[in-house]
Image (cartoon, rainbow, N blue to C red):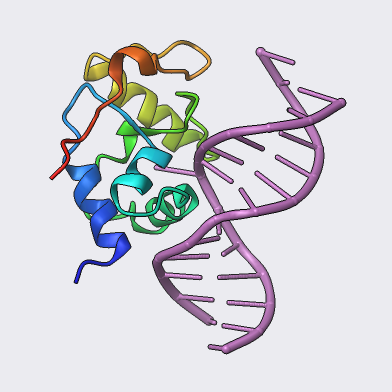
Length: 104
DNA sequence: TTCATGACCGTAG
DNA sequence: ACTACGGCCATGA
């Protein structure tokens, strides 16, 4: 059996560089279409280790909403290094960079 | 078991 | 464009 948390981690690690996913998308792919908050909570508590590319996760509006200033700056930088356009408001062009996981 | 928490989401003003 | 509010639900104490 795979816990929701494990699924989320697996899905996030499967996001290719240069692409982003929303919290809601990850939650839906993990089996909880309304579980976006769990994804955020999971990342908040697991981001320390686990080698997670958490910077590829943005909210449904393509906006970076992290409270922590250092983390927000790091996420913006990481995305730009991967070729993702991030404007000065911390917004990403979802239409062009959203990642659609393959169904199985 | 119940209770509180949260890097969200969608709708409304 | 912006803020405010309610609902959502897995996790940990």
